[in-house]
Image (cartoon, rainbow, N blue to C red; front, side, top):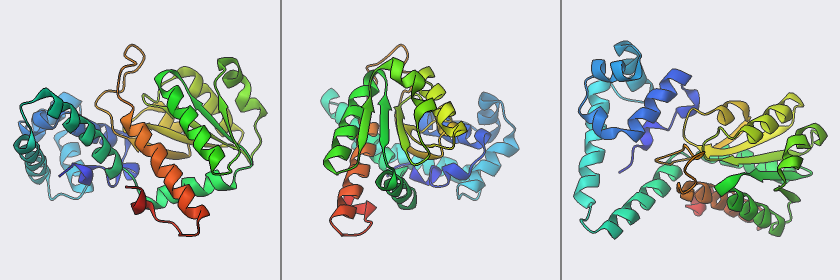
Length: 260
């Protein structure tokens, strides 16, 4: 069991509602033990906002949402082993399964088509996300997509001004707040160039700028001072894209489910 019911309509939610969902995903135990009023106080919103969000994501009210969260925690506790190694595996499994639950076949297909139909695809990732950008770039090249990995920060600074509208850019940032990537994304969008963001499931700045986006799950996203944070979710996103593109090349049609 995962908390995927909370994320199915994420792109349709307001910024305030997204913040509530993100808090629930990261703090399920606190939500289990809180009333709607208590949760509203923590998030500085009204009790009505909590109740309305519960209904927006498919529950009759906050009580039913709490019951759903409690069921998730009970199942997770029943599976938990006392061995630390098992805890590590459990956390990784949670990161992968929650990332998968955030995906939508229609959205994946739109991004795949954009990559296939772009004259050039530029790939940018900074810091610990850099190797993931490199992996995506090499895989796209193997799939006969002209992909260019941008590693030099000086090129990142000027790239947005030199791109054409038949090109696209993939920006990879777990936090969604990397300054150079945000500047590049803003410049590209001002010039009507498509920006594909691969970022964490948070209400970050990058996901607001990009016109194509894929979300991954991460327990932590503040990467500026902690680059040891797991990027397993980003790896999952890359594999989903690569597999779908490979399938399209072999004539098997769109089959997002085969990537899972």
